[in-house]
Image 1 (spheres, rainbow, N blue to C red):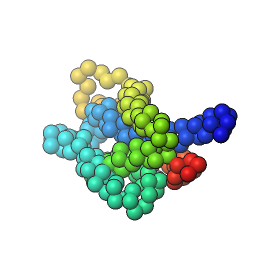
Image 2: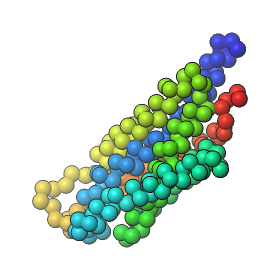
Image 3: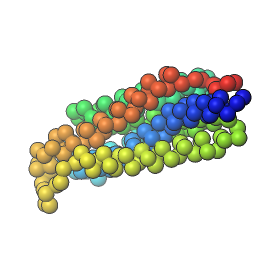
Length: 214
């Protein structure tokens, strides 16, 4: 294999790995975005009970546990690609569902759905990357997944910052509910995840199920 062919193949592998690492980016985004949205969806849903507030924040972890528990079985029975496509569907559904939630129970259900996507992606994205990458460079390719998690965390913080409007000191719950943040801001924070989630879904369909050249 000449140098041109080698560079072309490595570029192809990098592309595949970056697509798979989108699962890590969505993991990071979904994990953090709720922090910036919290004051606004709590006002919208009239959440005053600390237990209910904690459930809203932690409900996704229930889905994470389930997703992680079934990830190995899914990988063995369905391969690596199909469960990652499923995780992209779950991320997309969660982004849409939490953004349009009309009541608290609906909000929680879609947070759990997103958690299942996190559980699948956190286990299977690095596994898929390891399997499609060449052995001599596998470490650096797999490390990309961890990098994209951090990028997802940063993206969530930046998007929350861009969407949220300043809140007046001493603003009451009703003032927050009536504001942009309470009406639409928190919905856009969650809904913004739909863009990378759909991109991940489409690109995973186009990705191979086995190592390039194998």
